Structures are given as C-alpha cells and as structure tokens.
Length: 191
Image 1 (cartoon, rainbow, N blue to C red):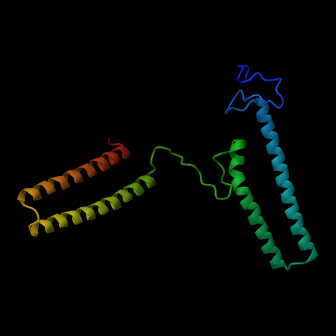
Image 2 (cartoon, helix red, strand yellow):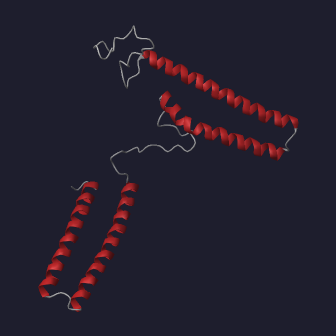
Image 3 (cartoon, one colour):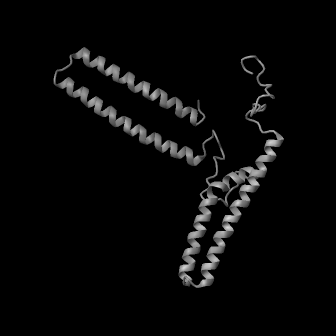
C-alpha cells in the first residue's frame, strides 16, 4: 500500500492496524479503556491483599505463632503492603486529582511550593554554600600568590614577568568574581 500511495487506507490488507490518529492524546474510548484497566488492576491488588490477610488470620487461628510472633508477622506483612502501595499511592493521588496533597502516602515528598523563587531557608543555605565556595577560592588564590612570590624570590621571573603574572592572576580573580557576583545579585533580586 505504501508503494502505490494507498497508505494508510489499507483496509483490505490482512492484520492491518490503522496508525493512531491522535498521538500523545487519549481519545474518550482510550481513556475509558484505561480507566477499566485501572479498575481491573485495583481489583487484582485487593484480591492479593485479601489473600495475604487471610493467610495471616489463618496462621493466627492455628496458633502456629505466639502473640509476639503474630505481631512480628503482621508488622512484616504490613510493611510489604505499605511498600507495595508506596509506588502506586502517588500515582493514584494524581489520577484522582488529590496531588500534591498526598501526605498519607509513605515516603511522599511534597513538590517545591515556590518553584523559581527561593524560600528564606533555601536562600540562607545558598548563602552558606557561597561562603564555603568563596573560602575555597581564596585558599586557592593564596596558593597561587605564594607560588608567584616564591618564584619571584628565587629569581625565576624578572620584574616585568612578575608584573605580567600578577596582572594575569588579577584578571582571573576578577573574572571569577564577576560571574559569581552577577549570579548572586540575580538570586537576591538586586540585578
């Protein structure tokens, strides 16, 4: 059909499946089918949990475990169920429109409530990081300056060579500070 220009109208071809007419967007039929699949998946999960709960109750009734053993087994099973739900819980919240209020989901971390804007805590942490970065830069510059002074004392460079090296180092320092200073001004809104 492609060779004769009849594609995608290939209804006479055996096993032909027409390409998706709405790629990336669900049609109502696709959405309803997806919802049916979710219901079936949820029912299968509930059946599995009922089997696990039944197994716990049966073991408890038979007296195979003491009261402490039963509590430990119960805690282990609850942990398994909770871990199983952890991945699905957030997705379920999104599906039912409750996201990002998913506090009941284990290990849920609420998304940034101020995207693109730093909170005071974030700003203070960033400033601490800048201080640490600045201190590391100054240590590096001290080492460079010490190396230049040592080379100068040893006579490895003449008067002009020292001045040129000093100018090059100062230019590097200015360039380093220019980028950091501009970024810091942007972050605190003074740019």
